[in-house]
Length: 245
Image (cartoon, rainbow, N blue to C red; front, side):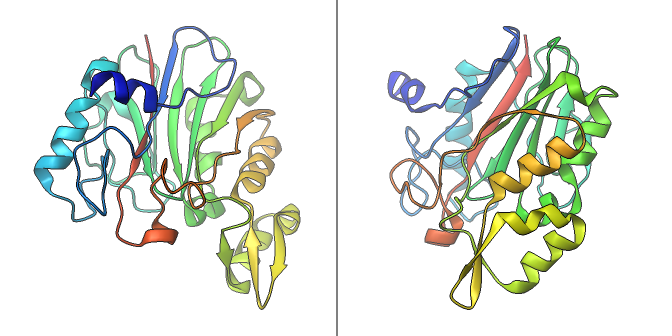
């Protein structure tokens, strides 16, 4: 189980400092049964609670401490993981202390990892479309650094631009916040297809974070590797974890 689990992880492809550690889990390597099969770490999706606990325990050999799990509410609150307890309501967590593990859970929403070039601060962000639209990335950057040009970001697996179908009202919300967002939507019948990766890059670039990596893994299309709420409805959650060593 351990070797299979290790092989199922995705290593973020970014030039982070050596003391910045990060793991992206997939749906593979756990104990949950269908439709949560198998490495579901979400305790809010009606999976067997014991299975979820076992899945989280399976991650223990790969992280220095228990991750600070958030109650994600599609908002823009950012918490200091070193000063927070698990299950606080927030959609981003940061730390500047060693061995404190920040984590975001997703199944189509965009997970974003952020660190500075000096390896002194890291953050994990749950950027669902609502929180992304309302400024969770901007709030996170503001919370962790006065020098955004010293930061880098990695965009993890999310619903891709050929699968994220939305109505005109969602498109308009993004454009109202940022006119550049118009380029992230294309007509799809009477609706639109949205590109969360492009929007995240636009938002980060505008506040000075120009080193942005990742952004090519679609949760909706890859049935074997990723959970997808849009595709399956009742499903599990992946974890995107980051910490300093």
